Length: 166
Image 1: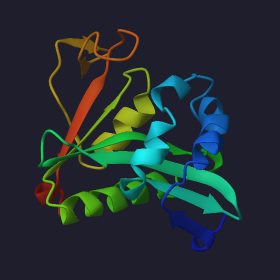
Image 2 (image 1 turned 180 degrees about the horizontal axis):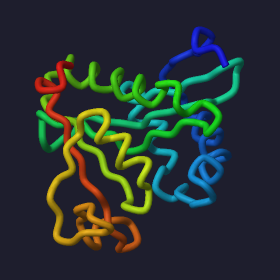
Image 3 (image 1 turned 45 degrees about the horizontal axis):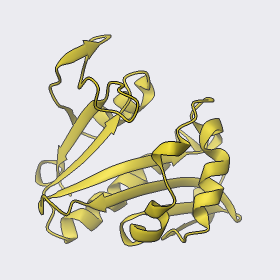
């Protein structure tokens, strides 16, 4: 795997089908496709990224700038193909999104994950995100209950861009 041959680009609407095809495999069989409707690939293209290697989708990040809180940006979904993990691709996608957010005057980036996704929790913390307090805990991790799409618990993160040096 050569990272020098990676192509980073803005998504196009047709990329949605490519992401839907790999989503369950990239999340160990968890079917999260309902959480990423096609509209994200139509209306948040300037703040989202797709990564390809030899025309094969290897990673993506869907993010947007909050309309109601002009100082905030939000990473809605980020995925990296299992065979491309541990090479810094997820970190690079977040770095690029944070740079876009900072250039737009955003001060904080927010994200969420499920507490069952311990790898995601560790990833966000390694990037410098703080875990926000919740109203419960799951295996020692603060969560907000009944906030997810199916009444599930979510871990909330925030990263202040100035503190992160972005």
